[in-house]
Image 1 (cartoon, one colour):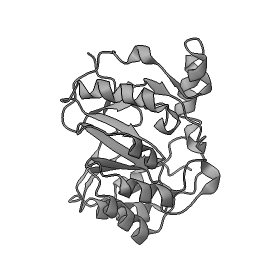
Image 2 (cartoon, one colour):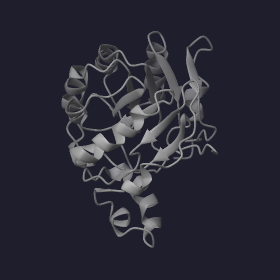
Image 3 (tube, rainbow, N blue to C red):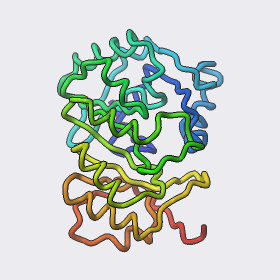
Image 4 (cartoon, rainbow, N blue to C red):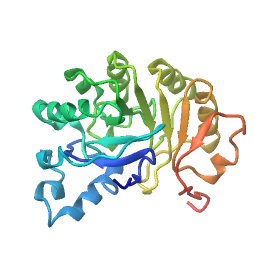
Length: 249
């Protein structure tokens, strides 16, 4: 089967949307995930409106093999917080049939992971854009709650996404990420020009440099000004070719 790369994660070789939909209405998602679903108007009304729903006919889709850091992104166009438990159990049953392929679930409400027993070939992720609380950008649980809920999850394979990165307090965010013991961390700026409060480039460089001392850092959409300042010895991997020049903003 041909692998198809995701615009959000180049490590994603397949976006397996057996479940679709979310009600968090994140400001920066309106121009990405929700906009993509608008293309489904002639295929599925619920996809078009981003209403949480199930596509059981996709359970038996052929899924590509994964190697290295690659994964199949389960429910990429939604948040499983809004899925019925029996839907996710059916997805997990399918995943258990494929123990040599890696799968990825991501939620802005990591507390929902408590409801399931995930096999070892599953990565669990959450988004932590900052340590600061920005209430107006999303209806998702506040950042502090995401941190503590994710820490409580005993699954051994965790991923943190700091994208779109928003202004933060360096020592606090560094300590937060370290406490989660993530297998990898993705870092990137907003590419949709959503008017977010972003950190100075120098602070982002400092954070990436430090994270690289204790986990694998994967760089996504970053300003050239950030890339040029990263020390050569930092352990990171640039996974996207679309490096944005923010100098004209």
